[in-house]
Image 1: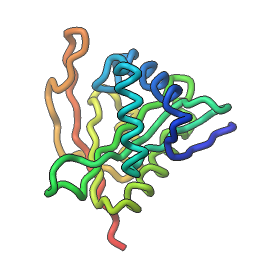
Image 2 (image 1 turned 180 degrees about the vertical axis):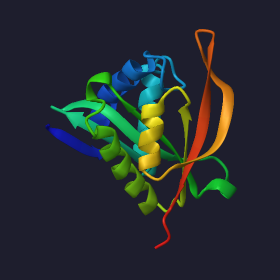
Image 3 (image 1 turned 90 degrees about the vertical axis):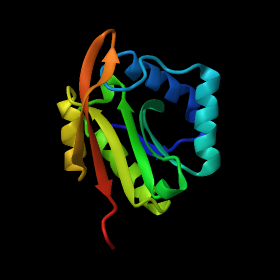
Image 4 (image 1 turned 90 degrees about the horizontal axis):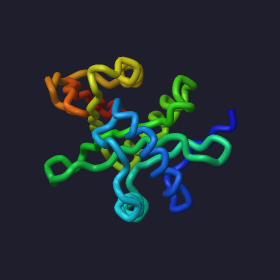
Length: 166
C-alpha cells in the first residue's frame, strides 16, 4: 500500500473536495449529502492552512482518498476543544487508513494546545463508532433523530477524547 498521510496543502484541495463529495453522496456518514461549491471548499481549506489548524489527508497513489481534521470550536470558553471529522472514499475503507489518519490528526491537535476532542457519529455506523472507541473516545450522549436524509431519521452519539495527562 503506497499510503502517505500529510497535512493538507493547496495541492490537495481539488482531490479533497472530490473525496468529500464521494463520501457525502453516500448519504450514510456525514451531515453533508454533497460537497459545498468549489469556491466554498477552497475558502474553507485555505482557512485551515492559513490558521495552522489540523487537517490531515490520506493519499494512495497520489490521489486523496480521505481526510481527518480536528478543528477549533467557537467561543473563548471552548478554545481548548476541537471537533473531529473524518471520511474515507469507499475503496480506502477497512484497510487501517482511518486509524492512521486519526492518530496523525489527534497528535497534531494535541500539539496545537487542544485538550479535548469531540465528535458525532451516527448510531447506524457501528464500524466508525468501534474505531473511535479503539482510539479512546467515549460516548457522552445519545441524540435521537438527529440526522435526517431523504426523510429517514437516524440517531447519533456524541463522543469525546480528553488529552492524556502528561
